[in-house]
View: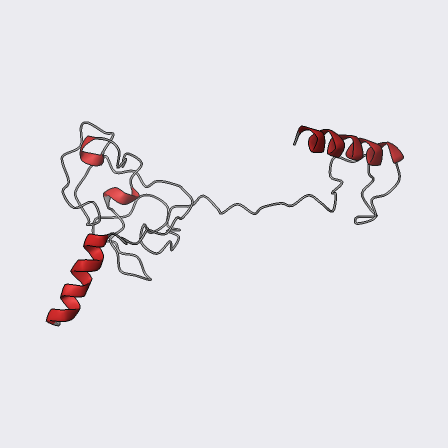
Length: 145
């Protein structure tokens, strides 16, 4: 790995010393910091936004949502613990703000006065694929619920 890094650096240095225009971008010189090399892969990052915790729809209005505001796509409540800056599943009561009252259902709207909408990348919720969940689903299908 170390050899590959050293070889790559020497190859880039040789190309930069050659001067002239980049074959992929003739208007940009090779000495330009904007010169791109064909082997570099750029991974696009997702935008950091305020969005629905359930489906990822962006909340574009200024300020924080009211208690009764819902997502336009999935109808999930927006003023919930799962959308708050202080929410942390690893902390006792899942809230880093000690002044806040205990909220039992983190996915439902509440009256927390310390709510602040978090800006983050959307990561879809993980489906529960445990043995217990599969057994519960099988039982529901068997009983017709």
